[in-house]
Length: 210
Image (cartoon, rainbow, N blue to C red):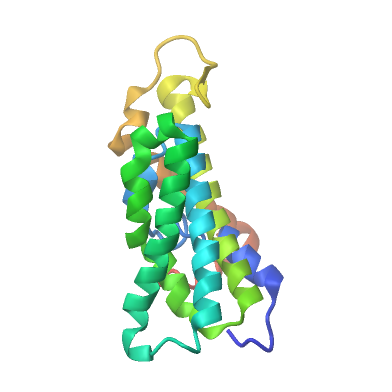
């Protein structure tokens, strides 16, 4: 994307819907399933990814003219690891009970394809503000995907939302298991594809190969 013709609205819309990391690009699906058996875990994981993506994009954009192209990938990984470490330590200090359940997945953000791909494809080619917007939009899209999955799975699998019991009786326990997570993801993906074809002409997933 040229830095001379930046459309922030398009960048934001792509991150939320058109190029949603989970539902449209199908990236980082296993961590998404692993942490969305409850809304709270999904929300906190999404916030962590949003923060990391925004800061990584901003850092890569600022340093893009100083990074040798031959070592750009190791450089990006070092930047990602730095911000993941910051996020990991903050969450360990402020959300201890949740961190015990999902601490491993916070560390694994280093290996999330979506973080490295946006650094390589967008932040390394654009100025600071567009890169920050792209990182925030993609992170927000990831956050919203995890919250939607968390609501769907916790409500059906536990009869609760954010740990508060809502439905009496026996829940559908399979929904909080990995198989139920992928089933829920498939349903939401199908629903979004239907919306895309119905209202947007089926153009929303044009970048699905990233």
